[in-house]
Image 1 (spheres, helix red, strand yellow):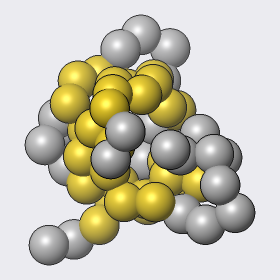
Image 2 (cartoon, rainbow, N blue to C red):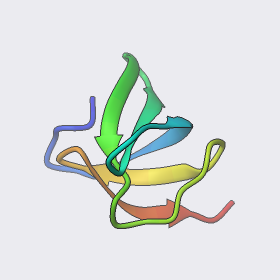
Image 3 (tube, rainbow, N blue to C red):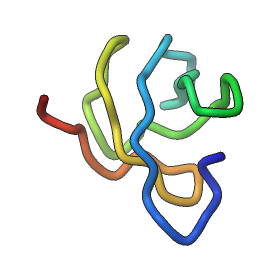
Length: 58
């Protein structure tokens, strides 16, 4: 779940219109904003309150 008090690392599955993306979470797929980062499918991003705030370098 990406709406918590902590940022959660999730993998981007696909990009959608309007700066959104489908991501894989522990509880299933969710749609989050990727407007602040340049994420592509396969990237791991940190999400806080439904907003991607950073790309995790592996």
